[in-house]
Length: 378
Image 1: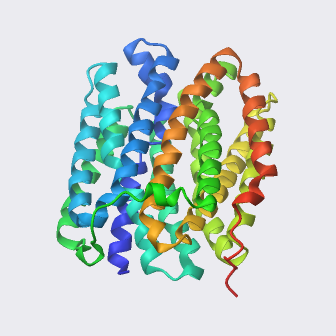
Image 2: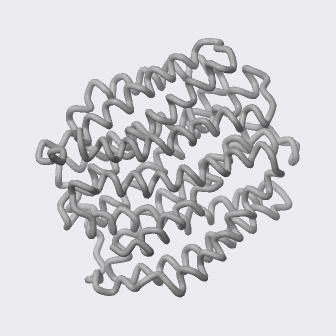
């Protein structure tokens, strides 16, 4: 893979991710402007995640039959326009529609990135590349979160819109064709789900993503209502999860190559359990900051370990596995945000206990997803 091509996909992932995490921190500000409940405005999270997850299932099979270059040029252009619509939304319904469209057109980036890494990078180095790829998205997410506490919320959508249109120009001239990878169009999901290993991995991904987003996407509301923190402080706390997440993706990816995928996944979920139960305590602000750092690091260890594990699956399952990674994560994440809202609205303590216990159960059964055929690099 050419460095320029890989860099373009990292930049595209950055544009995609700029406001994904920031939206959770923006909920109080958007609710105040439109004079709505924070729990109503919170729908902007799952109205992005669910269509993203469903659309992602199409892109892996789609790039078998259509040049991925053309697919990406169309998607990044329409994704940028959807961000413009969100930035100039006159009411909450317009913002909801914009988020829906952002999910549909943004879903192509991650599957294709994983497909390219799996096809063009040696197995013993894939974790490092997966870590760099996702690490770049966390850098953008960190920047978006940081700015969400300093600038009007509308600019958090306008910035990636402009950046996406500029990137489209670069892609038009520098992104190569992928016609050599073309074959006939087919959905191989039935074949993929005949493999028990695949089923176990994606059940695990579904559950861990549901729990993560059920907690993560309501942290802004938690800090606002339970600790009475202002917008800047909330944004900075959530920013810490992305800051540590950058190191988590890079370090976790490298460890996945050296120590094994399953060990990194297990370390990540153990750290998440510790963090959720610490949130049950009324910690001082400095301690909350440390918990957020550890939370971001733990999630990204789990994330990069699982993503690298998928690139090791058989080539005939690769496109479906890459699409399922995004599809399952975002569908379950959207459901997690909705479920988390229902529970957290009644009691944050109850929510943390339920979701922390759920992660503990997953940790006990994490050995079922291990791939004994993958050994660390010497």
